[in-house]
Image (cartoon, rainbow, N blue to C red; front, side):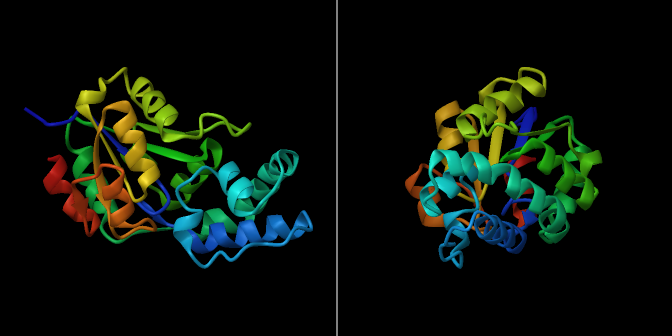
Length: 216
């Protein structure tokens, strides 16, 4: 009997190397708003959490400015961000293997759902996925505790006990713990193993293909 009926992948830092594109789009957004941009050299500070949290807590924007920043960022992401994404080595092999199994596979990301779909199309991996689940245009449904149930419902009301979340940050870990799905952390992304362990993670993959031994 297969261990899972659903496998949920985070996008940035788990499927895609995307940091430079995200960094550039934040810098351009802050410049358009005529606001000082914080130091963005530590990717773990802003790749993983929802974008509105990044603009609020890291960039220090007011709620009104965050509301202005989101569509500006998405516009820049269309130009600079999507094309900057590349697959981590081994990810396509993992997706191909999972496609051959009875399991459903979805992307479950805090990224805006339309932008996530554009990235998936750019990377040409849509054929391996049964769903792409992200946040709404208004910035809601952005936290993993909201996104994971949404993804499981989209995949056919799969029970949490039959699902696993794969991600690279403690935001992914906390979402899995909160919703009762298993979690596998990847250490090749932008988060840290220590932060994921502190949030409750116990299984880790050093490279994408290591995931197969946990899933299959």
